[in-house]
Length: 129
Image 1 (tube, rainbow, N blue to C red):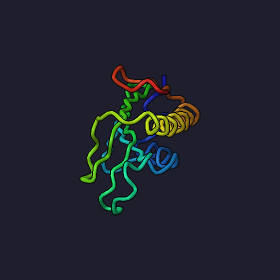
Image 2: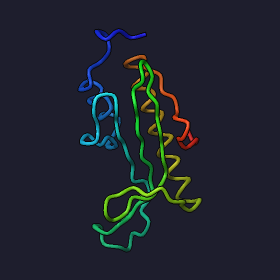
Image 3: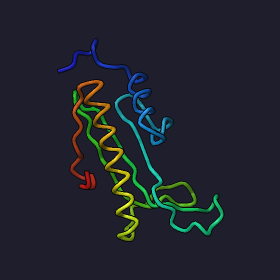
Image 4: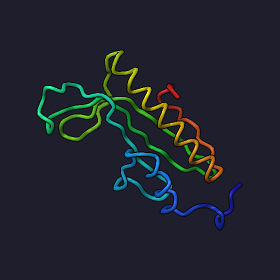
């Protein structure tokens, strides 16, 4: 078990999590709770850029003692900037799951390799990782 003195600070964790890629939503994070998302597939690329919607995933990551609990959800990012928990086509889902699995491996590598934290899936998380 990591002692409080040896545990990384919130800011040190934020720096490491930002280094994984463009997924961390810094404004939504607080100590012990981190929010990520990924826009994987454009729903309709014929729409003007400001009206485009995307298939993707979002993650709520919470620290509980020396463990992080990851709760992933697949869905659609709409033109208003909101995530919707809706069903997507099999083709889009395959690409979204690929990006999620790639990200999850990087997340595990950073948290376990740099800080000796474990990462487990929340009971409501999608089971693709």
